Image (cartoon, rainbow over all chains, first blue to last red; front, side, top):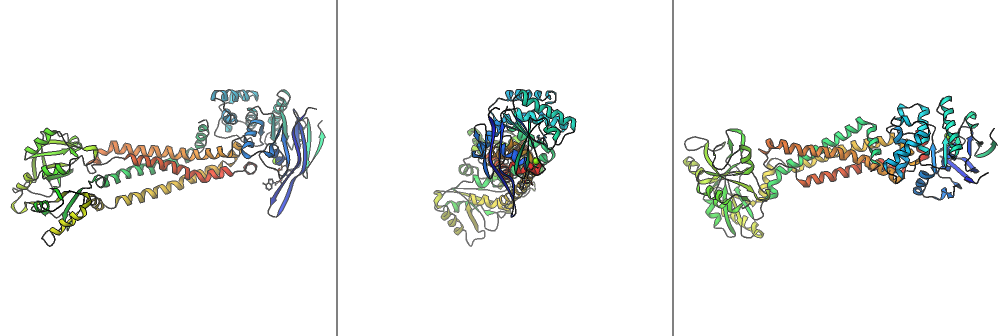
Length: 229
Length: 387
Ligand SMILES: Nc1ncnc2c1ncn2[C@@H]1O[C@H](COP(=O)(O)OP(=O)(O)O)[C@@H](O)[C@H]1O
Ligand SMILES: [Mg+2]
């Protein structure tokens, strides 16, 4: 097995609701190897999104550490963390989260605005990413003019346009019909296999989890492993 | 600048709302521009009044005339360098709507005391040598197409000649241009002697007001007092003030324009500020999810905040620049008709600059609250709420 890209140690996240304390993640450890494709399963409310957010640096743990590559991201300032995210992780959401006023191409171009690239270079890369997900002919469409499956493919193009090593997908097929969902899974498998992207994918759906290389279960703040079929 | 497309896209999100907001800002700045010009029109006289000039009027009111004999008596008072007088003629050309600010003046002394009324020397001589001559402002000349040598029948709403006629035939002999545009470019000056001699017996030998040039501006208060003392307990008591105070008093007669303008503009701007802040607040609330996505993609808190501020600025600047531009255009193009009543009618550059500063300030204030929300927005919470 190759070295690990993601190293989570002693991760704890506690939500306080009034006087009540809800320990969502309890001293949790996780290793994800470079090139791995992990399905993260668990009952609703078990903390899957919370874990993904912590790995992606859009939330802060109460204790424990998250190391991605050679970076301990829990040590970074908000600003440094933002820069780190823009270069090292791609996020794919259940609800796609595209900006409705921007065309597909402009949506994909968004993360590149943070780089020093010229406009034409940004445009070129956005086109390449769109063609990787098979949507080069929909570049000028607004999200409302696309089907759910197409929207999610734009979402994936946006996630990979900066060429990050790690993709974090939170129920990427949760809002799609079976057929579109399968196409998205196909795409993720391809990105994992041919582009070498490391993927962590939250899913409810055992059928989706089967496409991953392995599955981990989150329950009561702890993980349990099982090998994928 | 690459963020501009994002700003633009956000504004285009709710086109109607953006247009209505920008429209209300446009109206606010249009009013600001027009009212600024109006205020300037009413207070211009105050600004350009000389510091070494006093004006003596009838104690009762400006409308009451003073004996002409006061001329020599004022002249004899210590500290007075030069004296002249003028009279409000109530002039018009053909019809009362063609109002002409006409003054019978003692030309020799008047032009000495008002050196800012510049005219070619040969025209000046021609004016002095023709009893029925007139010296008129260049703007007035342009408006009626009058040239040197033209005969103009000027009519009075106030005075009648001995034969009952209300028309004085004068010849334009000089066209003046106020130095550095400091002064009324629409006045119509005729010779007092010509005017006076044509009046019926009992109506002669009065003057509307006296203008006094003092030897030492620091002592103008004393001189003013000395003049009023000189005529105390006479049939026509006087009130002497500096020209500045006189002009200000004149402006007061049409209401305290400055205060009114300020009150209106403040009310309009306050409303506009609320409208814009509300629009921005709504726009940010609706987009918590989008802003959280931008942050997820790596936009820093600062850049998201700046984005929201730029949006607010874009709305106020677009609305404001068009509004102020429109005001300028209306004053410039349509002002000719108004200039008849308001000789000084233009948008002072100070007010344009103030308008620009106001746009920036309002953009920032209106955007501050929503920008603060955007700054503090926590990604994980916002994404969860947004579904
Ligand atoms: N900001 C928050 N405040 C309080 N409780 C929260 C907050 N965010 C999440 N939770 C709770 O934490 C638990 C885990 O949430 P989440 O990570 O979204 O679970 P999953 O993605 O597995 O459904 C849930 O019970 C949820 O209600
Ligand atoms: Mg979840």
